[in-house]
Image (tube, rainbow, N blue to C red; front, side):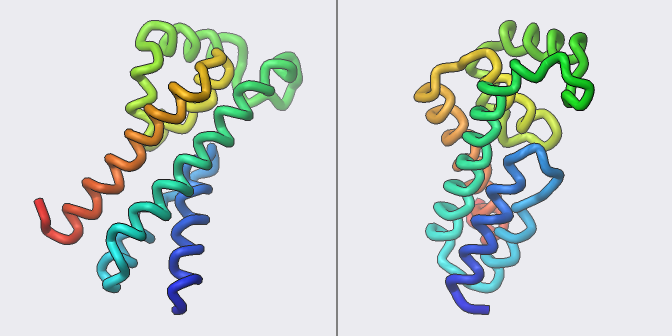
Length: 144
């Protein structure tokens, strides 16, 4: 596999994993780390892709409210209200959990729905995503 294909594949896996699609990027990162690719470059590529996927979710959240009454809308009124109450209770700091499977992606959508300022969103989500990849790389390479 060429270096460009490896990094592009990781970027795409990380981007899609951060959206509401059920994907994982960790296995791709671990495989490339074990294949002796540059850890710092892998962490950077995965982080940029994953953060960009979360930004897509935030943008979707910003625009999704206008479709609330549609039949195909992914959440019913009660689910949306529950998510909004939870986010309001824990606030912007809950975005530090955006790296978690299952709850992390919807958190980024709800942040958009509730109009979390983009700069705050980007800072907290980036910290969470980079932190997760740093820990995963350190464990994979037996640094910690």
